[in-house]
Image (cartoon, rainbow, N blue to C red; front, side, top):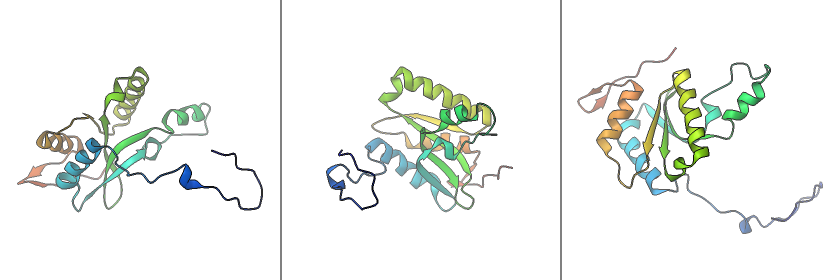
Length: 164
């Protein structure tokens, strides 16, 4: 990309040469998984946030204490594939990671171990799902229902209690 000079005059840059429109879910396995959530879980009470920054659901207790910047850097720039939230309050109820081939990489496994421990420590449910060409819809829904603390009543989801 050409270097853009700092000046007050607007410069013409051919953005079309460097950028393109992208689908939010550009991998078929992600779209297939989303469709299961949409059809079976979301409905009128829940919404799915997609590719959400980890720092949007986990915060630092005192970011300005000594070492706070280091703690922030550990969660900054990491993303979660999906977070299911209450539609009325946007309270996060379940984080979901789809584990594809990149999760076999040593660095990625270290990142995953950090995220697993972090979610366990703060008591935020995390669901890891291996990427598949075809998902077992019933197994996925049952695990989501269980991790979100929901109860299924005649194929309807009962209320999830508010967290305090």
